[in-house]
Length: 397
Image (cartoon, rainbow, N blue to C red; front, side, top):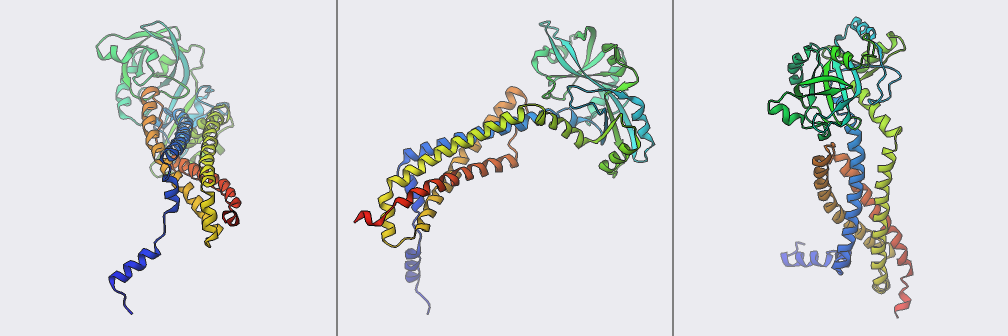
């Protein structure tokens, strides 16, 4: 039998579900606002702590990512970019015997003292020395400017270095001759590049291997700190790295470019307190949020205990009422996450402009923080549900 439109509408109206969880939350707007502010604050704290942690790890490989290489050679004694050990340059030359290797670039790598030409203060700067005719970075403009390094004592300064190194970029663009001392030796800035400061170094400088030897007279001309290996198109970098590791003596370590980056991140993650500190900060934000949400939901259930008892007396099952509290927790999680996400985006932009750290809102972190807030709210709701056990229908009569 076909129902009339009015009858069907009446049936839908009777079958509708009352948004009890939403009504309970919005009954006291001030309490709801306080709850959302607390959840948002916990979310912002987690976003910032995890963002700083991941941003610092990413900042540690700022230069690593720019190298034009597929496989790298390192000394087994090298653990991070702030303490690069040397190895014989001939090991890099030996890799040319592999059929998949099409090019190599020997690189000297060390932290030297740069003197600010304006304030005369000194600061460590990452110095890279290479043969100007060899490819070094993916950015082709660096190769074009490398010809300026053929003259002894010339360097390329990273314009994205921190300002503590002096107004080098401004002076150079004004046409001034920019000269300073590096390691007590006079150098002249022949050009500017754009690399970016890393966690291990606040600034970068590129020069020729000949000039590098002049800046570090105690280093051996036959030793290097990093060997870049370029492979033919289509070659499997992991397989070539494994093959070279088996063929070369044990005084070198062969890694893929991704492995080289991971080595640096692992050092900062495991050999320093950075990872623990920021992870602990995120955990504290989680705990603070749990306390806030639990207090809100517990108070809400306590205030409406007679109403819950009435519903149970009318025949509502306890499981259904527990579901109401769970839905309150879910609503708080969603509504509290949205302002935390927006505020996190704004604070990330502020951190990038102030510190030049690569702090961005990546999807993995966004999902992680939402999951933490969801667990936080639903867990607090589960604890608050125990209060419903005190709702005795007999007490209302």
